[in-house]
Length: 202
Image (cartoon, rainbow, N blue to C red; front, side):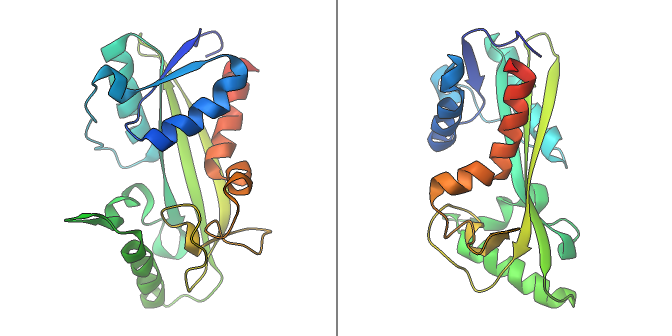
């Protein structure tokens, strides 16, 4: 997909933090990133059962609606002893009637691990799948992984989501304890973006 992105990339997200993170990563390439909200795009329903499937839905919907190349991601936590759960339902596990509660979601992960009858180490990985879609229907997929294990109790108040219970391989701090820049250097999203920039600008 080299040459597809000229100067502007539509990032198919309404998450301001995610848009800023991606814009920062692509700044060295002279790319201007615009978010879905700037175009008044709705958030399409994610009906697939894989990260790539859900990212494709978002990327292609945005590319068709605007005529711009669009990048979307789908990511989540996959726990080996839970047969890959929560997986594509990572955010759903945190849903409540009053918004998302990730403490509740982390407690559920731990509760289900205890019920599974398995013992530590509880191998897990964060996965991030990026899909770059062209307005003509072509796309390219870039997958990133951060491997580690689930620890308990929760550790750290940095990061977001399930970070306080994820200890990356080779480190003594959870994602929730790490400096944000250190985490961003080794994260699943960083791994996917390395592959994305090599594939598009390398």
